[in-house]
Image (cartoon, rainbow, N blue to C red; front, side, top):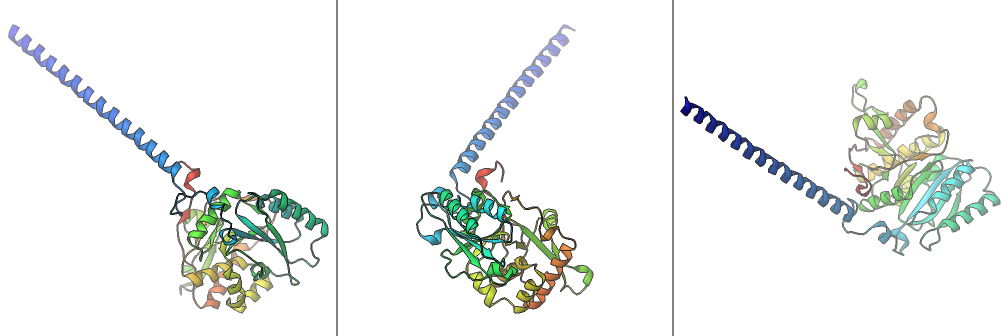
Length: 335
């Protein structure tokens, strides 16, 4: 009995020692893993802080890029407006402070020319808001005919290759605009913008040559898009010439008659020229206007008709779908 008790005690002691050593081993391993995780997190944070955006091959920052004096290193804003002077003033006041902005061209299609009061106010705002000691040029492109095609007519005195096409009721932070400009510089032949839209084959029509237009919720649901709207997009100034000279006449006539879909027409034009999709840039949008064409009834149906008419005019569907989105990794934790 005594031997049996001693054996049991020895066995129990061995189990205790084994358990203690196992716990210590697991504790050491956990501490090691935690240290590795902390070290990896610090490395990622340091790398993120030191790196530039994903589209740049150098470590130049926007502040460094803004020191270029060549006008082609900057961009021009081409703003479409129509009898919303308060919105126009607010937009010009905001964008005039963007660092690499070279000039602002206002597309004016109203029957009366801009008033002296409006001209004086806008010139004062542009002069007072210009950054980095530069002087942003302000010009009005006055058109006799009221047509949505006017926003894409060639501008003879446009000094930059990059054009930021924007509506007067849409505002983005300058940091977002500057990042989108960086993205555009990596792919200057394509459209780079903030407002994605989609198209897809209408399977209910059977033949596969009929399409449907998809708004924002279609993009959100599927994660794919094939257009970025010209209400907030960068593109090369050469597309102004192509829009007038190369775009099928029937498309321009349809846009002028129906006062809609000029943005879809530009997306078709660029996709037809490049064979590539646009690039959607993530950015926070502030819509300061109260109403627009998209708020009217039957908007999606009308846009679907545009997509089908334009595809027929081109003889094929040039739009290319993609799921790529450009995100400025400096402003987010996870990307």
